[in-house]
Amino acid sequence: QVQLVESGGGSVQAGGSLMLSCAAPGRPLGGYIISWFRQAPGKEREFVGGIRWSDGSADYADSVKGRFTMSRDIPKHTAILQMESLKPEDTAVYYCAARWSLRIGVNTDDYQSWGPGTQVTVSS
Image (cartoon, rainbow, N blue to C red; front, side, top):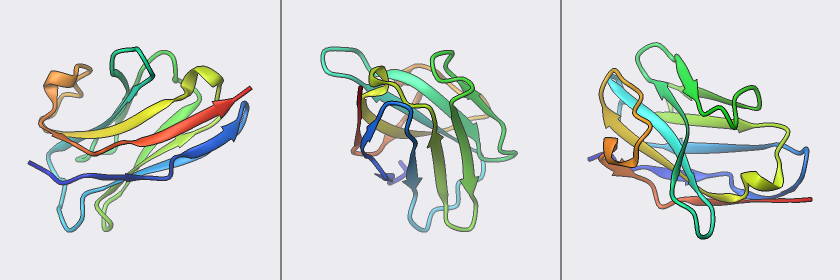
């Protein structure tokens, strides 16, 4: 289990930007996958993107590809999700999750550790 804490959520107008952070305080993340999921009201939690801590390579859901970018701050044990060109349909609670693997899983069952979530609201 890895303790994860998200921050950076908030409200923004369509077309705006937000940056989310996922911190694992004091926990080196070598060998882990850190991913972001989101859940809108009445919908299932869906994969947004994931990053391989070992080399920084990332994969994204088609719905956010080209708009969202993941990166990592290794000394701070923090994964970052930079969100650009936000749309109202990006409104959701965003969760980060961790799994010990080389593969970025896209299903919630693939992950053992979850943060409490942070709200992102995009108004039109």
